Image (cartoon, rainbow, N blue to C red; front, side):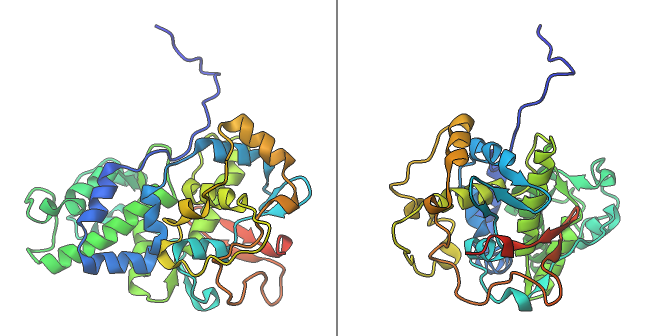
Length: 331
């Protein structure tokens, strides 16, 4: 039997398959619960239907400049912006007036309390700061979870309480799997604190979290990491759409929460490279006049590009703080 050498480099990987359970969970949610999820996640839920492309992400890594948080190509720089992420999510309100979600320290007991699960429930993962999707799904994903007596739920037979916790659990699972993925496919328990605040604060936004997780993942991979810990699906769409260059500026109109699901239509007629080597060749030869600088669906409200005193903004995400200075790439 052939064994892999301990010195052999592991292949680069990304989040590559949406769990069927997450699809089923979303489909089973009631209309009221879906409205709450869409208020917080917006069109990001449509990422459930996007096919991951590992080659796009792997080819982008060498072009990432971690000291400036930008991609540096032949004669220009480019970076995902808050406005672009907000546009993809259909959450294009005035970001300056929204509450930025920040990490909340959540203990295993705190995690169980927020989800109305008895502290008597034993799970080895919780003490390590994460849980499996199955742990959440069997309690709140499947409709049968409400009536299952052996799951340690403390809703006391109140379906409204169960439905409320079901929504919280879904948002936590979505963030842990789609936005802040782990290589072992587990979910950070601290995300439940952020999800809880997002539900309670009407003007909160997940947009900075999504963007900064992408920045952090790019930097880790640029320094030798072999798993992309950010939202690779959104970065993939972002890069592909910037390659959809048109001779004239085209306004596709407001897309709202259908922006992600409408990507395929907007990319009709554009041929993308296949495979890492082909993508590297395309990105290496790409010049500023060959890309689409401004997406036609971007909101025409004020752009956030600098603070009043500094030329960058510090944004907080789950596992680090990242500077955001998109004024370097504005056109």
